Length: 95
Image: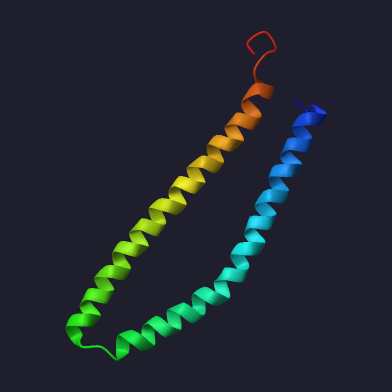
């Protein structure tokens, strides 16, 4: 398995570049996320206890949904990796 086919190495390179681009784009969102978090905290501090409680519940639900979404993206990434590697690892007559 030390001699990977050229097409496989190129596919891995392309996938790496796609992930690198996505990571760079995500880093630019982190500043926006910090600003949004600050604004949300300022907004919450100006509200009544009842509204603060409702906002906290809403944040909890949104956080859960976001974690589910991130988990599904992770699982798709694992499946993507398996789809790339499995054909190379199987004997030629099985393909």
